[in-house]
Length: 166
Image (cartoon, rainbow, N blue to C red; front, side, top):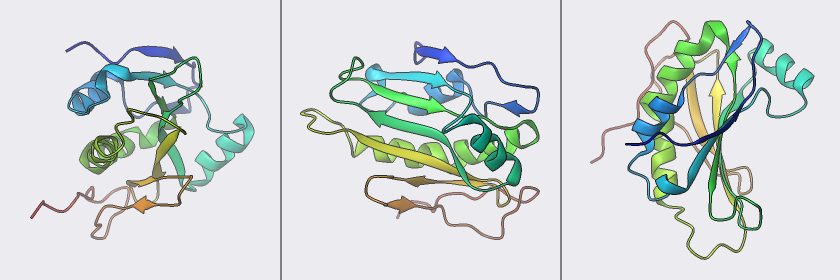
């Protein structure tokens, strides 16, 4: 399986790290209908850099993955996946949260948003909650959120998981 193409990777300071790489993203997203239309961008901030750095260092929630379809851009008929950094000491926590419940939620969301006749863009983000060690899915446009079922979690505790399908 070829890797999801990368269209850029910002260099980070020693304080930060990307929580996941293209190999792990590819293996976790190869089953989505949009796979051939995905591309990655590893970028150093989600909003002005100074505000992003303050947010990350304060342990506020922030997004670490952004999945967006732009119907009227030079990326027409492509899905952009933006990957954002975490504090280096939280890389494993963020990666574990992405793999255990963030990427399964994203796979499900993508399966339900296979855009064939786009009129407007669609977007979701995976929000990282550092102090509790989990991520949740949010659609900024609609306000929809999907959170994993969590049993007492902390950055030193057990990673939360999605409930088993019934």
